[in-house]
Length: 129
Image 1 (cartoon, one colour):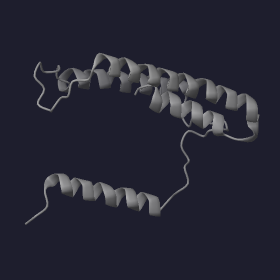
Image 2 (cartoon, rainbow, N blue to C red):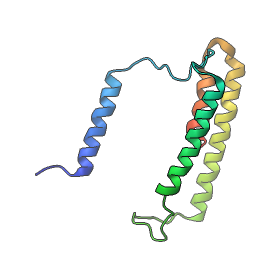
Image 3 (cartoon, rainbow, N blue to C red):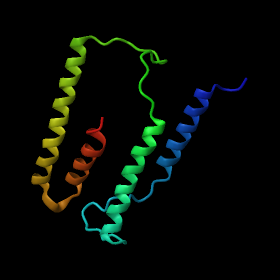
Image 4 (cartoon, helix red, strand yellow):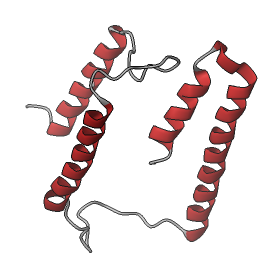
């Protein structure tokens, strides 16, 4: 008997994560802590960025469908009290992260890249969530 598709996906994900953990590499993204010179003129960089943003809107017009009134996934109702409590907790956590990153920047200065990492992780990961 073959494993279910869900089990196959879980096994593939576990293998991928295990491989990534066993074979670490040097992180070279974003050049935190140093300046970076663009290999192309600034106008070309900005035009390319504008084109990509515009193209993403065009693609989303054709591919993103409005939400259905009756979704196919299971739903569980959440009480108003629990919803407000979790919202408040997440708001406080976001403020603590934000001001904590600023405080760390003042406390440690230029001796580490931790403040920049905390700031960008909070902006690019935490804020959208």
